[in-house]
Length: 224
Image (cartoon, rainbow, N blue to C red):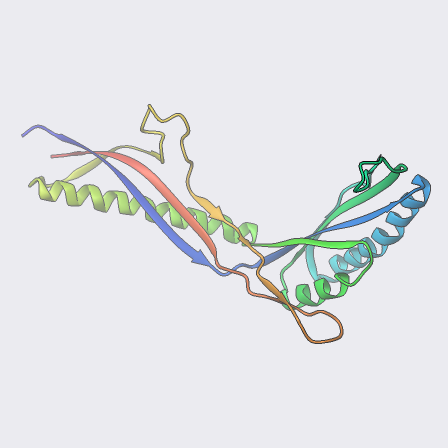
């Protein structure tokens, strides 16, 4: 019996507890005079930057970043269709990466009360070192699934062995597919939190979901 070509797909998925929480915040100010607005945004953002720099120095956070201040203006309209006087706006985006989630919770609870500060979201991820290791491990498991599947097909045909011909990320062996999907893929979790309904300062309670890492490969074998 001549060799048989077997083409299969292998998939694998694993879940990992997040190791980092990345807080995304915006600092905003507005007013009638541009100079006043610029001074206001500086007064709001500078304490945050200084606080994060101190936390980075002490090791409380792994990294942080701050974009340059953006300043723009427009003339808003009221509910009667009348254009109002010119209003100036300023904003700056800041991110901070925490590995201590209790520390993250307290920090977010504190800055959420500050004037002009908006918490956009918190995303969860693995550390770069862990991410590389888990992506490699999940991809290797996807290949094993493909080998096991091809072997099962060969056994069903009464063939004794399989030998690999090609292996590729999902879609790359299918020349007619216009948009191949690379593997592995990491799905980062978004923040799930709740504000304390009791009086006093708000307390953020985070319940991060697991990070889902998936991989899919296509493989072609000969069976004889």
